Length: 393
Image 1 (cartoon, one colour):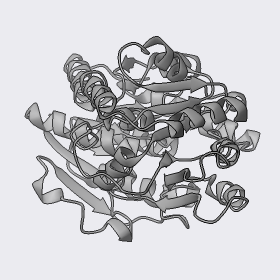
Image 2: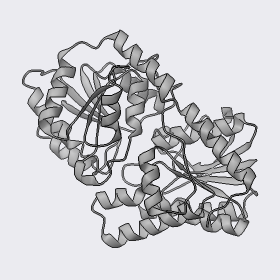
Image 3: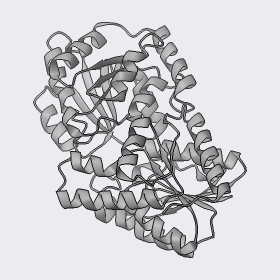
Image 4: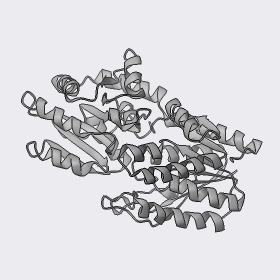
């Protein structure tokens, strides 16, 4: 088949979507399909690291508007990708299948362009964007519009790729006519592994990836403040970006200089080095966010490098850590509150990391949460769907 993958974010920008889609494109190429990725020029700090010439598929990049943090986030920024993408599909090469990554605005424009070209498309639902909008306090009208576009994108797709059963259940509520393939989620374990450079930054906990309002990462700063008197060497690193960074910076300013560090987006290999050097990785979901079905990809990335995770909040991550406690040193799941997080941080900073435990965790992750297996399931599902000629409604 001739396949296009459309996404406003792609390697070398480190993100869950970038990792998923790069492995998916490679899996399609390995299955002898012709693949073209329709994406964007990376931010200035990452230009020159694209490595597109060595990929087994084509990558076509257009310039795009970015926000103040260098991220493609916000309605103008989305439109700067979506509208040109509409015409790239409408007047571009004929495809047998288009795989589209959210936001729902992109799915909405792809549905229209694909219908005009009589081309089936699949929607990759790693998150429920309308729920995320609602959890951040967006106006009701905005949430309803986002939900309508999301529902439209899912109903029109020949298949919706879902990352876990919780997301699939929510899709059934929002878009009951959607054809869902629950393919799972994971991380690129060829990049995120226990082997490789280790960042030398002392004893630090790390909050990698996106930090948005619905995650409520400030609770870790509050917990660290209680740990510092007994562990003055302890530090906290926020690596990536997020809409909550201004709030986090304000909270961090209450602690001594240098205790909390903010590191902007770095290439995936460098992010892996930061994770390897961390005493523990951090992740959270606020209980009141209405987003408890999420399983953040940062958790997979941490485990793949051998780094245990402190997860605060409800949902499948906490249940997973508890259920798999005997298999590998995955970390701790606790309530979203300062006191239990403080206790977990004290334990993490109070012992020296054991190399054997980290190797065990990384080996477990390579076996259980590799994106390669996820991509193979996605390729098989979409190939079978396309062969049967199924279409959305």
